[in-house]
Image (cartoon, rainbow, N blue to C red; front, side):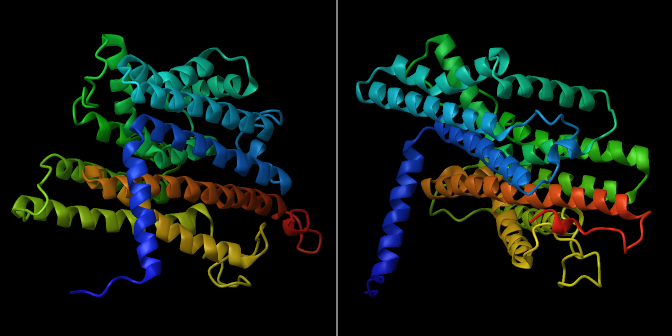
Length: 388
């Protein structure tokens, strides 16, 4: 017989099993709601960090100084969190009392209230959100010049692609309430291709933006960027194909499954490495200057401490791999895979939170470099002195 595991591993296994059971027990609509709130909270912390370091992100994004205030974002986080908790408590009470109608209504309550606030609320957060979305959609549909804010929003959407795929469950929950099919909802009222299609939309949007930029600038880097986003499609759709056969545990996969597995692993590897290198070299502007004080960094570091940049590089590589895995719907066949995918969603929100700091910092550094080009080095001032 095998020796018993060390006590530390025993407790880790116990905690992981408990966490897995919690993830499986909580309905998808509530998990998706939590991810949405967490994403908003991450952006609120980004805004606070930029303001504390005097990085004019609003000007870089083409916004007025009054827009996107931390106090408004944190109000949204608090109000949505309270709403989610209330809906979940009602859901549990109805579930324990076998009140199917209440269970179904509680599941869609958060998203119905969120939709109502987004459309009708006079609060600056939701009012600004309506105007912002209208401008971004208009820019995309009319093929206007791609601005930095459009790029940032498109990249942010890729981080919540799994959340968009989970909207199929939310829609099915709403249909269940509308049709009065309480207690009979199975979460599969839509075609199986809808979820991967929704997950693909952010990458399609960014690919179109890159192609639009290429038609205006003829710079090959825009085409390379477009191919980066297109490389996410095989990860999503091969995984969707693997999701369909749903092989029985303990049964050896056939040649078809093995071929899909090889293609999927190859796609994940290519997408992860491609995206990671683009993050570091192009989106963060690192590794360009051979005479930089710190290896692989650049001369101008607004966050000053080099360990932050090295830590972000390592973190981005690790979490980029998790990001590719979370796009894979076939991992959700079993409870353990579902728990890991939810963990990957949380980690991707954290990665995007870190990525935003260095992406906007690089945009500001480029602006400072352009502004200082006509002046001599003796009269130019390093931005590090103003941004501690």
